[in-house]
Length: 101
Length: 317
Image (cartoon, rainbow over all chains, first blue to last red; front, side, top):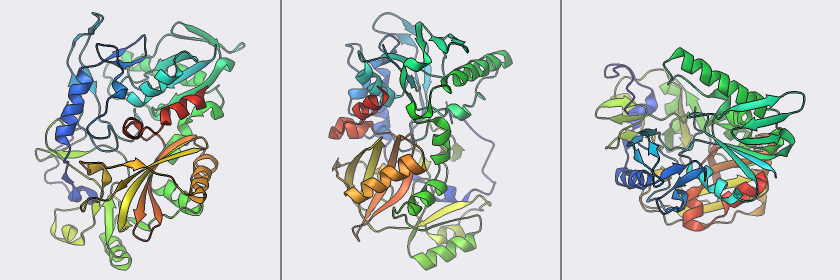
């Protein structure tokens, strides 16, 4: 889900946006995405778990799941290990900021 | 049985880690206010409450951890006015009830989080608390930025806010897709780029003295406990978040700095939890460069065994 603003091509930019640099962590984000897609939120346990019941939070991510701009992605719809249907869900960026801002 | 309330999105693995440690020790009510708020009832004269299936008295709540900007939740993503109205009513009911829980039981009280969540103000307060902070300038005027750079030596540039933005396929987007993108990381301030580059607007810009560093230190404060990890400098990376390999290890701060950090967190920012980024300079001084009142810490726990979630859960019980 890419959230476009208006066309910015000819508009003056904030100075800090003239200093953008390439994100070197795309491969790691992709690995993280696959991990997250393999797990689902369990309402009874109130946390995300894999099919075998082990918690997602214990997994070592390739990079800290934190502290930088990460791509958002959509977890496709499907069935959980207990047979419950889960609709597709957008997973927002992970940064050090609080959710909802 | 006591009640602990966890306010976090379903995707928040930090909240998962805390919930798992609270299990069996307390009744847990986890709420994702950006997704779904369960049914709620509250009697003002008795302070009896029911959220979902759990009935309790507000006095039963021993702690509440809040990782959502509850004070400023935006519902702009909802298009349908009835749905938006209902969501706002739900939120106001929830906030109105939760505000009856004393501020001291919150990690963190969202309105305090909000004040501490920025670049300028917490760094000014930290300097007043005796913590070393590299000098910086904020200006819309490139002349002042150039002046600062020539006076203070090499400097870095970084965003003031924590809003997500990236340039992907030639356009700026708020949240990039899973493909290559550029982002405004902390980077060397090269005045030549402003002089030769594209047109700039008058948005204020933060330029800070560059500290020649030995490494980066990530500090986590939970009540009176201070945890830290150290990542030695590798190559010429300015922003440690871009490091592909993290040879991080557990680090112990000296007692004086720990006390200053605790003082800043509790007495000045009125927080029970915060993460802070320090740079270890070649002069052997630790310089504070960022305060995140709701920062992440899970990698320090899974990779280094630092027991942050346990400390948080103990603080809630």
